[in-house]
Structures are given as structure tokens and as C-alpha cells.
Length: 422
Ligand SMILES: C[N+](C)(C)CCCC[C@H](N)C(=O)O
Ligand SMILES: O=C(O)CCC(=O)C(=O)O
Ligand SMILES: [Fe+2]
Image (cartoon, rainbow, N blue to C red; front, side):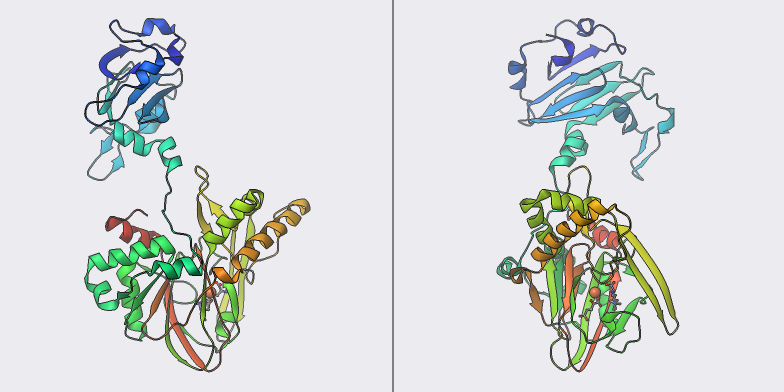
């Protein structure tokens, strides 16, 4: 059995390690059980019933815990040392100057006991890793889990979920209620707070319970009506098809808050569509369409010259934004009104992009995916603008909508500080 194929049975044995290219058999100190791999694989630790196996490869350390096979580069292991001199546990910051680590570094000794991996480096420095920490922080571990657990919905799924209503009083005073609200928001990408006083000030207070407000060229907390005061169709009585806002920002606004303070007239219902549900259907039906939408950069643009307002915003990015390590969708940028000239891709890709975009649009327009709500004074709606599309029905009469955008980082920050995964 050669060194590189051999799994070492978990134990508190100390091994002397070779220099790069050294002869493998000399590695093993006497007394190590070198049974067949199959036998080693069934080894269980005493403290948790996990089986743990490891071996030193030429360029990386291989560790298998409870069936998860992980690979750690030696320079990574040195760089992530959590000893007092390498890492400040008070501030959670790295002390170690990574530039001083030799890129071809290898440990001179390795030992694994039931819970810990011990590495001794050539200069004598000792690094300890808790095995559970390695599982949690390995690439392979990350690849397997979603950054953000979600429930993808169509109108039936959402309505049947019977999401509990959160009242303003509880939301403002109890962290438990705020946590429940955020949990719902993270799962579905929309959440409501009820019984809010129908004022701009109360809306601002409710928004600030969750996050910092993201000021934009529309203002901090806005209150708009169909008065053509800005160069955008939002400021009319026209119907607006489903879209995400601020697609023309390099970082589109993370969350949108709406509170209808007044409507004396007809129509004006709000449309909500789970963009991730639609994208997931595209992925399942034609992965090449999903892939194209996640790869082709598309420009969105906002040009305004109305009264004193002069703005020119440009945002470039794919319609579907995915994490490269697990292909998880984290942002959809979908606004056909604000989509700019496509001049970032060659003509043969353009045709395929339109096909893919049509497939997504068809999915997003299916009536069963539409959730229609009539916003009333007192009911504040939070929308995850990176996931859920909104639109509106045309309307008559005076309609006043107030709200704001929130900084996404701060919403997630609040959620994490309450113990939620975000
Ligand atoms: C919400 N508020 C009325 C302030 C702005 C509306 C922005 C509308 C723009 N077409 C977009 O989709 O980004
Ligand atoms: O008027 C509405 O209900 C929403 C308009 C809109 O899309 C927006 O303000 O972003
Ligand atoms: Fe909008």
C-alpha cells in the first residue's frame, strides 16, 4: 500500500512527515495500524459517533469525517491557524502576516485525536484545529449547504403556508417577534407588519427596527404619487409589470419597503412573484438557459432629466447571480423597462440569451406564480429586492405610497445577531 493511497486510522499517534518528494514508506512511525482501507473506514471516535480518517497527500491534507471527504492545502492550514499569536479571538481578526508563510510549506508533524488535528510546522509553531470546525469551514462542507435556506413559492404555496401576521406592537418591542418576522422574510423573501400608523414617520421607525435605511437619489424615505415629479413610470398611474428595482445600480438595493398611506380610487393592487422559483423552474427544464442567464453580463440604466433631477446610473451584471462554489442563486436582476442596450456580447450569444430570457419571462408570467395583494394603510410590506419581483395594477384616483430601501448587509446583520442563518 502506498503512502498516498493509505488512510491512517484515527489515533493519537505522532507521525514524522517527509519533505516534498521524499520516499513515502519512511513516513510511518512504528506501531501504526496500517490495515486495509476498508477496515480503517469503519473506525469510530469515542466522543461522537463520527468516523474520522486522514492521510497526508503530497500537496494537501485529506480528512474524512462522517463520510465527508475534505482536502486542505497546507498553506491554507497554516494561514488559518487560530493560535493566540496568529489570530485575535477578541476581534476575530487574523494577526498572522500571510505573506511571511512559505507557499510550499508542509507540517513536520501531524497528530489527530478524537476531536483535534495538531500540526507542527518546520519552525516549531503548533496549530490546532477542532475537527468540527474543519468540517464547517471546508470547501467541501460549504459546497454542500445553502448559504440561505429558502422556501420557493407560487401563490398556492405561499397562501397555504399561512404565514403568521406580525403586529407592529410586538415587532417593535419583542426580539422574539422581530426574529419571527425576519425568519419569515428570509424564507419567503416577503413579510408584512400590520397595524402600523399610516404615517411616513411610523414607516421609518418600523424600517429602522430591521436595518439602516439606504438613501438613494429618490431620497431616504420617500412618499410618492402619480405626479410625474420624476422621470420614471413609477410616478404615473400606469400598470407596471413585474420587476426588481435599481437594477441599474452596481449593487441593487437589497430590500424595498412599501406602505400605502392613502388610496381613493380603483385598481392599484401590488403584484409579487418569487423570482427564484421561476429561475429554479428554468434550471430544471433547461439548465443551459439558466447557465446563460447567469453568465451573460447585461447593462441596466437610469437616465433622468426632470426638473432639478439629473441622474445617470448604470449597473452591469447577469440576470441570475450565483455563488460560483455551489451554483446557489443569490440575486436576480430583472427589469425589462430599465434594461439598457445589449452590447456586451457577440451576436450568436445574443440570440441564445433572448431565448433564455424568454423562458424565464414565460415562467415568471404564469398566473399561478402571481401573488396579488392590495396594500392598505397600516400594512407595511418588506420585499427582498434580490429575489422577489414586484409590479402593480394601473389605478385611478389619489394613491400615496411611502417607503424606503434598506441596506441588505444590515438586514442580514440583524438576522444573524438574532441567531438566524443568513
Ligand atoms: C420606489 N421609488 C418610487 C422611489 C423608485 C422607483 C424606481 C423605479 C425604477 N424604474 C426602478 O425599477 O428602479
Ligand atoms: O406603485 C407601486 O405600487 C410600485 C411602483 C414601483 O414599482 C416602485 O415604486 O418601485
Ligand atoms: Fe419598482
